Length: 114
Image 1 (cartoon, one colour):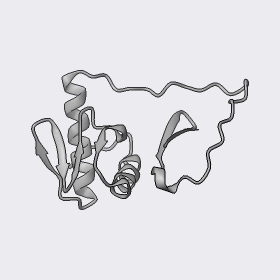
Image 2: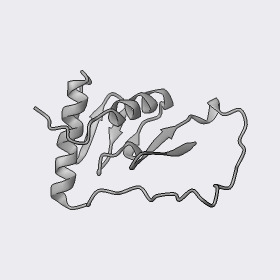
Image 3: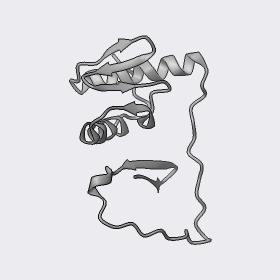
């Protein structure tokens, strides 16, 4: 299950694995609440390359043994596909995915890799 929660001027994405869900209740949002569309990065090659370098640098700074394979970021059984957002994480382990989402969400917007 993916939950989008507004926080200030951003939308926070939370991933909850299916086996952890006990009950689901769907509610209509209050008419006074405006759901903002999540801003997507410009998909130009330069923006994607910059994002890839930022994510690689951030993961290495967090001591993860990441490598590059073609256009993908790889470590262990995880592959992060372009454009390298939390929604682009591919793995067969929900726990690993959640930990990686947490690490990537903590990356500052103005982060510049060393």
